Image (cartoon, rainbow, N blue to C red; front, side, top):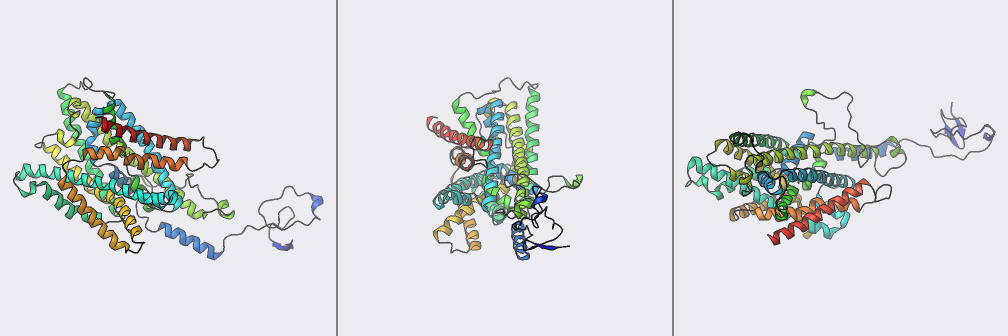
Length: 511
């Protein structure tokens, strides 16, 4: 039975052992203190109906548009990474050496996982979905404009390179089957037709969940390319009676050879400009178990990640974030950990298998050839189908990499016109301009090999390593100390990025 104590009604906890309604028992209360008047303490209550409705609305808003599955996110991230870079890996192994290249791949993948995790973490905390928006929140409007410009340049170069690959592949295939004089064997014709019929409709998609199915098909198509490369190279190894280590270099021949390999490796695992939007679209309840294995009993998404798992006490004691929303962010962070790990592993398998096996089979050949497609004859039917499979992958990578370029360009235009432009119209117009511009560059330029090297070693180093490293080292830890693993990871990121930037510039001007 309730009674009035200290001006408040106390229910079940109405004895003097409890602090007037508090669920915490006052064990320090002595029997001879019962006559003392204890001042009333604040009563911990549940949220009012209006507050709960507002929190539910916030969670519903966060869940809106989260249609990207865990596997779909892995495929999208993998397609953002894999593309033209896979063609250069036999040459990378020839320049860097077998052991050095494998070690660098593992090292770079670990560093890029850390930088991806930083971007996901910051996007969750700041409530943004684009790389340049993180920069704006942390470093101001001016830095955001600068990074929007370099992001656009970075992605636009990749888009033009994709079209060059498409033109090269379809030109060789059409010339073999229809004759070199056919219009279908024209480099310009192939680029324009594929860009307008296939790439432009895909590029109009503004959400990654609309591309997850084609991304899965694209990754599977690359499986054929791996099989084709393995068959051809094992045939060569068999002819050599599998004496494959005679001419193989395990370490780079000189500094210049190493610097030719490192920028390509650094550029090969890049999905940093898409990762924040993927984190915004991914379903936090996604699992990575195959459907045939069923669901794990009692499985429930939970995490003790950066945001921290929400508990009842955080909401009761006035946390800055609603506990339900904090729990949602923690679940997203956990799913994204699996997405990043899966994508990096898929990329590593493709790069290591295609590059390593090709190099072991014919080490001297790949020291002079920087393009996988150039290493096999145009009359090789098995590899011809592999070329078409690669084009399927490139066609999906194109819209995924166009997204950050479009976002950066739209941010610049909205800034220029004081946010008065219609977003949907601006998106469509920007997409048309980017596609048309990349077509023009691909038709007028035969090769972007040097451009890839400069972009991977300079702008790429800044975006992928240096800035995420500064995000970690510039933010104090929970303990207030800088001597911890997070700070060490951030320090490693920006040191590696700065070293890559300097070495690439020096190598470019000394070679």
